[in-house]
Length: 286
Image (tube, rainbow, N blue to C red):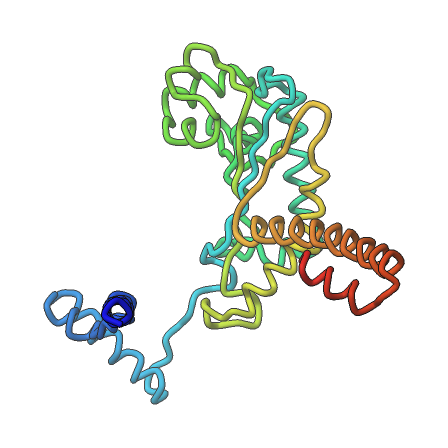
């Protein structure tokens, strides 16, 4: 009896200890009080609240951002040669330029792309902008709008000495490697999409996320899946598209799993001659 009492006492103490350890901790947040400790930030918050009050009362209307001028969503593409050869050749760069143009020609692209103050879609951040730059007098404008490719080695040499950040981010090699070899087998580009979209004033409106997700699932993802060629492999990731790719893979695998379970269930019904036993066995398997 004494052993039973000790076991009961030990179990009770363990239960109390677990309750204390795993009991949720409630933290009271007072952002207003926190900001009051920081004079400049509290002053900015106060000014913002006063402006919001004036806007609600109609005394003053705060002008919101222009349509799609604030970057919100990013899709990143990585290009790599399939054989590891130099990607900075006329044929490869022209292929990348044509691929980016096909993306810009998707039906819903111009309704979602990041726009400049004139309402036009801005070009993606890409090496194409430099190799197909517009030449205006003695100035080179890296806008990717030219139909003629500029001297590749001269552009690489210039970027290797004048724009180390861009080289590091978009050429797949270091500044020193680019200067010494003037070559690389990988590059990348970034497509930007803006808010507020047409018909919206709140940049945080979730409906804009849904619209962009529809564009990704119905237009952009199907295009990028088949974008690779015999010479260039296209990889991609970014807002919404990574999640869509994972969901597509999960549902694809789930379809195979459901098919396998259906086959097993039919076989069990035939083997056991009992629907109930087959259902119970399948439940144990699942």
